[in-house]
Each structure stands twice: as structure tokens, then as C-alpha cells.
Image (cartoon, rainbow, N blue to C red):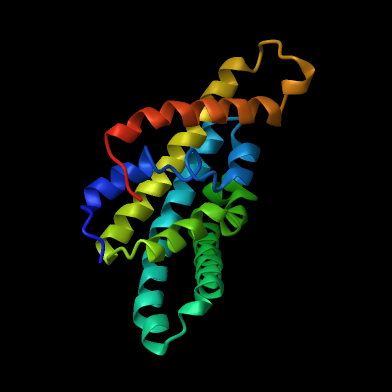
Length: 196
């Protein structure tokens, strides 16, 4: 059992062990959706919500079902099923009760299902042997860290949108360079709090 304080895990997941900036997980939607702050923030909130609850659900399924039955080797498949089912449930609820939000998010809601950061958090939770409280802190922190990274990238991209760029750097090129610089900046937090 890991003895790390859940508060340490929470802040480390946001800053020093950020899913995008230190593990480079969840890059597809990060690159594709990071052109406007409002859209990035909406997607970040949805990712944080799904990440928090799927981490908790996957912890319960793993510890209360897979481990007692000796089926730990099925965790990849089961985690993906839980993530997909929960994302579909969230999509149906938003469609039913919050239609304006549903149309604003559009294709981004189904994209959450294939966001590898969500699966990565569940797998890290198992590998690091987190408790339920630690897993919850890790899930929320990872979601907020992902949101922080995508909103920051969107803000930077909006600032440089009207500036001339060399042809080869337009689009994904400048996005990857900015992401690399952001990752280097976040390394500065590694002396404050770190989890492994």
C-alpha cells in the first residue's frame, strides 16, 4: 500500500506528473481542440468529470471484482469498457437534460472515450497501488492538470494566431513546440512535489 498523502498526489498530478506534459498521454484531443480557450475549457471540464468518476469506478471494479476473482489480467479490457460505458452515460444525460451544452461540446464528448490519459490514470492507479482516496485525488488532479495544459496551450495559440509563422511551423508544428516548452516549464515544479 502506498503511503503518499492524497493531497501530495493531487498537486503532483496537476503540476509535476501532468498527464500531457510529463507522460504525453491524451495528446490527440489536446492538439485537435486547443485552438479556442472556451472550447478547451469545456472539454477540460468534461475530461475532469469523466476522469474522476472512471478512476473511482475502475478502482472499485479492480479491487472488489477482478482481484478477488483472480482476473487482474483483464484490467485493460474492463477499464476500457467502464470508461466507454460511463462516457456514453454522461453523453446521454447531457443530451437529455443540458441540450445547449451537448451541442456546444459536439463531437468532443465521444472523443473522451478514446482519450488515452483516462486509461493511463486508471493503469497508474493500479501500478502504484493507490487507495480509494488516493485514486480519487489522482483522478481529480490529473483532470485538472489536463485542463490546465489544454487551456494554457489554447491561450498561447490565440496570442500568436495573427503573428506570421514560417510555413513548416503552422498547425501541429507550433503546437508541439509550445507543448515542449510548457513541459520544460512544468519541470520547475518537480522540486516541490513528486510522485512515482
